[in-house]
Image 1 (cartoon, rainbow over the protein chains, first blue to last red):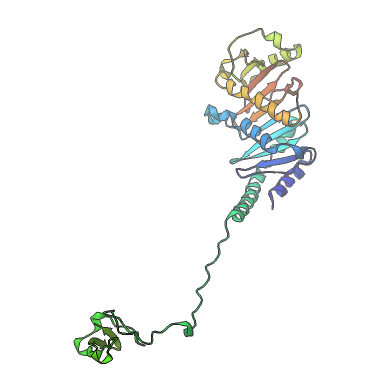
Image 2 (tube, chains in turn brown, green):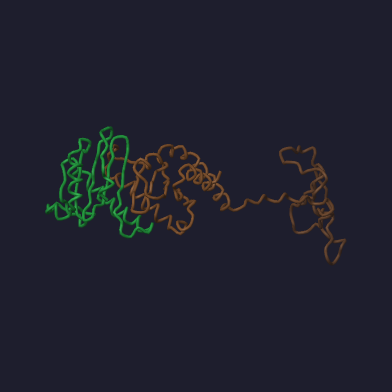
Amino acid sequence: MSVEAVLDKITDQHDMLYGCVYRTAAGVYHNLKAPYDLLDVEEVTDYADNLLSVTRVLDDPSFDFDSIFVEYAAHSVIAKSVESDILLLLGPPISRAGYKKAVIGLGLFDKPLMRAAAKVEAAATEAKLPTVQSEPEPKPVPVAEIETVEHIEPGPQTLVAERDATPPPTVLDVTPEEIRVEEVPVPTENDPSEGGKKKRRIYRGVVFWE
Amino acid sequence: MILTDERTDVAAFLSAEECEEIDRIKADESVAGYALFNEQGEILEINELAEDIVAVFANVFDLARRLGKDLGESDCFPMAIYENRSFEVLAIALSASRMVVIRRKGAKKLRGLRSVG
């Protein structure tokens, strides 16, 4: 149920009312109709709030009031605190008996009002939050796109591992018996036959140039 | 509103009808305290019990008048009723003065206040 719908229920119960205003920390709701819909509801509720809280400076619980009734020549206003919120009832001048009648049972609307306002405020907060986009899942890379190193030219590098199908072993796993040492001729630019030799160690299919 | 303790002639600020009504209020057993002051905040009459709290309730008139202005009640004499389990406090705007009446709850009701404002 919306806040306005709860306010309508209050107005229906007291058919002499022109309408109601409900102010929470987050906003002001009302079901006032013309000409009262032009009222500065924020200002009106501010005055009502001040009227209700004026006695708090006394710091005396026996002078704490949670509802007041103000009567004018052509209007009457009932202001009631609903926890930290304010409910305002606007109507024609009514007698004190009428005021008491209006206040009786008014507390029954406290919880529906607070619930409805909380719902609206939660929806507003949700709407304000930035939408969280889920991270795109990593695209699987086709096997064909993976570059494989076919051959490594012997050159200045001193120790280069040649990838084999088997994963490279950790150093600690290797025993001296498993290591095979080979000497490979390295051709020079001018005379391929005069090239020196380079040593390489191979173990478990992994080649290390020295 | 800042109240000052300049006692002035009460009758100058009240109509005959208001004087009569105030006498009735003062005689009411349920009335724990009352204060009468003019629009400038000068106290015309006050009883001991009201002295501590009347300054606070005096502000009610300004607030009620501002609220009334928003409602289109430009020249209004509002009456505000504060009520809880222990007390009923009435702030009544009279023709040329203002009155705050503190009534203990459970006692006999005040009568005829509407005819004052």
